Amino acid sequence: MGLDIRIPIGLMFSIFGVIITLYGFFTKANTELYNRSLHVNINIWMGVIMLVFGIFMLLLVKLAKKPKE
Image (cartoon, rainbow, N blue to C red; front, side, top):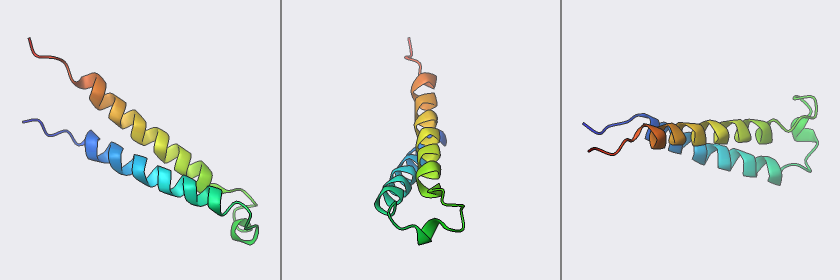
């Protein structure tokens, strides 16, 4: 059976990572929003980490696929 759980996980984390990163870029000027996180734009950091993880999962799928001979 060709079901691989890494594909939907990689797609989900990649899509959410892009959305959260874009939200962080659009709200960068709002200083009140980031008071609780010590003025660190946590949305950008977590979005990038999620995007990297999603791409890593998709790369694992690509590397695991071996051509049948």
